[in-house]
Structures are given as structure tokens and as C-alpha cells.
Image: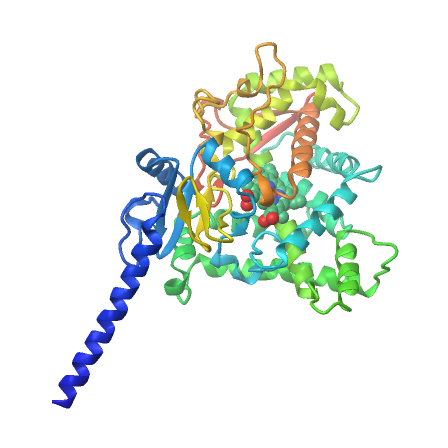
Length: 493
Ligand code: HEM
């Protein structure tokens, strides 16, 4: 009798807890944007194509409108789709949605550094990084000279291929890698340096794996999947090895640090760390310094490198566009002087091509996840603190009104009828607002200068008929990953 009583009491207790949890769920969803009904545990997984989540989100936006809710597993996510909603979230509600959504595969960097930091130190580390990058970007030894110097090395390496086919991944990638290395560590790698090759290999592998279906699944079900074998372990291993490299650089710098005469970004961070030691709540340990360096190193290399590599593939498919670029370069720069930033003003076609490459390749289609920092009223909905918010970038870059035939590569998307460069506020490849890309200025300069320098000296030659070049990404997730290919370059003179 007593056992029956206890069993009934337990059942009532469990039922009450369940009811409370359901009521809580209903209450917190009451004022959320609309969306498909989620199933327990898997959420809206059945409505999403893991091979192309950005496309699934576009499909859901057609059904539920520009602001909708989906559940990735048990994670509540509010998606913003289209110019107005994305702009509103990033620029009008910039503080409320400036948190960083959790990315489990990067837990080693969680709440440290810049990119994956959703903690109290993010604002200060970001501000410090931005102002230090700005200081190193300006003046005589600034980014323009840095990139021009690197362009010479790049051209030399390209010349060494002697018209033979080569894979551009690491040859082209070494240029942006060296630029950010110079800023961070005052270090220059030769193009066949083993450490440099290994680092670039890991950046490249991580960017690829992050965009595969398994990692989309892992990032939303990491509680269940973390003990299984799989490529998430490979990413974490790479993340740890990259951080270890940054830590060694930081330690080496620390030994010869002269706070009055910083040599590079690392010295500036270390000087800040030393100053902070006296304060009650120091922001930096050597480990935090390493995470910040690793963030900038990875983000500063792989994004620009992939854009350049994808860009060259596109130009091989459209030789008539390459030809027009050669003509503009010959007219404005000539054959011998290294391209300079000031040339951009007189090179609207190149400017338009670079923008169109970034628009077309749609490098980070769903942006990085943001997070609501407090309960926020948005268009009559209430988005609770802690909700992941995705201000999609592809919805702007592929807007049919702003960029007619968005699926086609057309530099005219950024040219007016007089052939002048046409600005578009829909061009948000670097996002906007409080979390806007820290390296936007540097990346833009690199893309313009490196591409101009390559085309000033070389013709691109595809190994297959240009018509047969497939520009579709091999996988889409975190990023859009270009197909592997080889090309030849032949000197123009
Ligand atoms: C073509 C090149 C690049 C593209 C398309 C790109 C794009 C982006 C995007 C979309 C974000 C997310 C913004 C958001 O959360 O709203 C981002 C963040 C970031 N990017 Fe870039 N990026 C590029 C190059 C660079 C470079 C060269 C650096 C380093 C100097 C860099 C450093 C960062 C950092 C540190 C963040 C995190 C900012 C934060 O969370 O506060 N990026 N980038």
C-alpha cells in the first residue's frame, strides 16, 4: 500500500514538472516570431537540409516571413532574412543582439579572444584589437606597403610555376597569411616553409569541415555527439594546435618584450597584459593573448585566401572579364609599377569585379551566430535573452531587386550606366554593427592589390574548357567552399 502511495506521488510529481516545463515553453514562445512546430529533442531538424542550411532558411523565410523562429535541436534560433530585418537587427538594435551565439566546436575559444567571445571581456578585447590593428595599418609601414611588399613575393612564386599547372590553395594563401603574420608576429614565411604550410592546411581544413553536414549536426547536438568519433575532433585538434603556435609566439615575444618599443600586435597585447596585472580583474592571461592572436590569424588568412582562390576560378570561367581587367590595369597602372590603393578610384571595373566576387561567392552565407543580450522587443515580438539570432547575409547579397539575376556573376551589379562604380548598401559580406568584421579594411585592400598585381603580370589559363568550369561550392554550411582546381599562369610580357 505504502509502495503504491509513493509511486502515485512520484508520478504526480513528474507530471507536474512536465506540465510546468511545457507551460514555460509555451509562455516563452508566446511572443516569439512564427515558425515551424518543433519536435522534442530534434526541433525542426526535419525541415532543414544539413547539406545546405542557408538555403533551407531562405525557404522557411518564404513561408514564415523575414523574421521567424526555428529550433536547431533544442536551441531556439530567430532568423532575420532580407535587407530590412538584417539591418534593423545589426544597426538599430546593435547592443541587444551583439552577443555571440555558441559554436560548440570552438569551445576552446569560448568567451575569450574576439570571435567566439560572448563574455564581459569581448568589448574591451575587440576595442583594443581594432585600435591596434588600425595603428599598424596606417602610415609608411602600414598595410598598403605591407601588402605591396608581399605582392612581390607572390608574383615571384607564381613566376616559378613556369606556366605549369598548380593548385592555388597554399601558394595564393601564403600571401594573406604573411600579411597578417607580419602584423601579429612581425614574421615572414617563405612560401614552402613547413610550419606555414601546416598552419594553412589546418585553417583550410577547418573552414571546409565547418561547412560539412556533420558539423552542422554537431554544433546543435554536441551534448549527445561529443563522445563519438568524427570530424569535430579533427577541428578541435587543429584549433588546439593553432592556439599552441600562437602561445609559443607570445612566450617568445614575452622574453624580449620592451613595453616602450612594441614590435608588433603581440607586443602590444603583452604590454597590455603586463599593465593589467596590477588591476583587480585582469583581462588577459598569456592564454587569453594566445586565443586573441589565433582568432585574428585564422580569420585573417582563410577568408581572404578563399576569396582570392574562388575569384581566380571565376575569372577563368569568364575570360572576357579577365581581358577587360587587363585593359584597365594597363591603362591605369601600366606594366611595371606595383598597384597602389589610390588606383582603385580610377579602376571602377576592378572595384566592381572584387565586390561581385565577394557577393557571388557568398563566403559566410548565414553570418556568424549572434545572441540576444537581454529580453528584446523586436517588431512586436519578444526575443528572450540568450536566443541565438542569425542575421543572414546571403539574403542581402542575393536580393533579386538589388542584384537582378543574383545567381549570375555580373560585375555590372556594381557599375552604373556610365561605367562608374555603384555602391550598394546591400553589400554586407563583412556583416555590420557591433560585431562587424574586424579585418574588413585590411581584407578589401588585400583583395584589390593582390588581384591587380596578379593580373598585371599574368594571364590565367584553365585546364578545362572555361564553359565546363563549375562554380558551385563543394559544400555549404558555415562557409561556401570553392571546388578544388588547378590552373596555369603565363607571363603577360
Ligand atoms: C574576405 C575577407 C573576410 C570576410 C568576408 C569576413 C567576414 C566576416 C564576417 C561575416 C564576420 C562575422 C560578423 C558578425 O558576427 O556579424 C567576421 C568577423 C570577424 N572577422 Fe572577418 N572577414 C574577412 C576577413 C577578415 C580579416 C582579414 C580579419 C583579421 C584581420 C578578420 C577578423 C575578424 C574578426 C576578429 C571577427 C570577429 C568580430 C567579433 O566577433 O567582434 N576578418 N568576418
